[in-house]
Length: 356
Ligand SMILES: Cc1ncc(COP(=O)(O)O)c(C=O)c1O
Image (cartoon, rainbow, N blue to C red):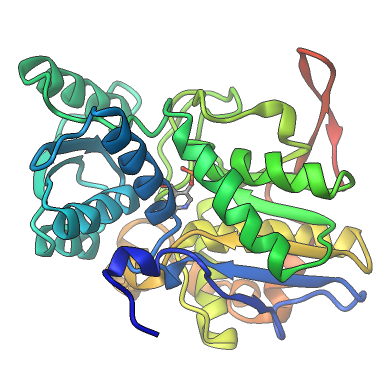
């Protein structure tokens, strides 16, 4: 098949069944591998959608400049689009962004603008946004996609990603997805729930993130979580919330590559850890996990033994329970933090009880 450019390779990502990392109760865990996009993550889809809408609206003119705050993957996607369509791309990044991600974006011609001073909680997301706002104030011609607030971010998944899933699967009992901007969990749930009204959506977040209203503290997983509640997250579409600890998400991504040959990042590890928990308590259910990015992003971090020890995560290497599929499944059944059920009424959301 001949494609006119690499952007037309975005989407149609494969779904793979887990064969060794599973629960023996007739449940099934399917993983949609977003690393098969040309920018190696799910953010290719939202980036393209936001850029194309801005092109239509005239907010982004030929030869213009795109600016965005990014922890990595949206930056890679925008850099790719910029290279293909002739836009200059400025990415506001911080020291937590993996080196290989920065190299990937720089290789595509993006300019990297570093924020080095964190906020009082040790996070960089707020300072990055402030930097973007300052640069936009200096040059109003810059196009800022604003992934946390731009409705085209969830729309990309509601219209494109969800349609792909419905074409591939005739039913799914549960959708498990990680949350940062809330774009993909919101967009996917919106469309999938219209077609599959019984679908349970499990939103997966990092312990330490404030997305679901908890106080912020730093954590090691990348791409997941936020220091505030994103406007693009529609809580009314979320049925459960499962906070995951660094060691749980990172250990799962390492076991996945060793025992399934699936190289995905730590947020995908977190989602699969949550899916194992859900599957254990729901015999016979089919669980679809969205694996947001490529593990190759983190070869110098969570896949590197020295990095893990230096960052206080030696437990991932030393605890035999976290190093093989059966131990990991046992750990997922009794996780550090229990998932929470949300009960949604017309306009209010209350946390009800701990979910099995
Ligand atoms: C690796 C990774 N996982 C999960 C997410 C969360 O995706 P969303 O922004 O759609 O909530 C992101 C977003 O940047 C990501 O890069």
